[in-house]
Length: 289
Image (cartoon, rainbow, N blue to C red; front, side):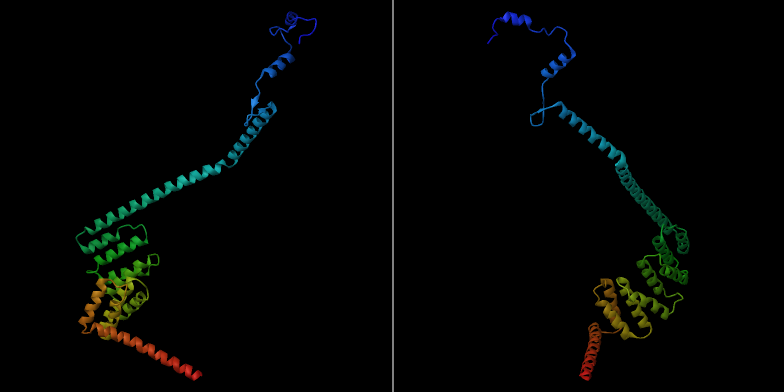
């Protein structure tokens, strides 16, 4: 409804002109009125104060993240450096070990190409070894080459290997067994038996090989029954190889012993010992009652 006494033309004439200069507060008011309201996450209008708070919070979180990176970032960098360096060092060590093994093998093959066996042993002595295990293998090879010309020296070389605590037990056992088997050495029967008794108390194949050598010592001493019983136990052992079992059987037959009787004799002796122990226990219980 128009105001009384005023026409539309009069209102239009009195309408403010936007092209005319305006005061600062009026321009600010028009800008805020014409500005489109911001939308929030759920579509609701967001005021300028909320937007300012979000921007400040984001800046604070960014500053905290940079502060944590400056404070603890060196740990992640150090971990990466350690991992990369460890992997590189491991590969380098493997390459060094491979190169040393190849050089050792080439030197040993070159030494074995020498025609004279005594000279071959001297060349093997000059071969450099990377560790006690490699040195033990080279010394055993040199002892085998010097066996014909110097059996006593070869035996002493093997005994030094057996007494070296830095060498692996399997190499020490093999060296002891080889030293005992040298017939032209300085060891007598008692010394050989003492060495073999120590091996027989161990485990593995070296135990059975030591038992075989003890049986041969029994044969040399004239005690064929003890040798046959020992060889029978070797032939019936589950750890015996087919070759060792075959040798033990052949020696038993060569001694004129029946394999079945030898086994039955050993079992009978064990049974008699068990029966005697049971009788003693029964007698003790009776006397106690």
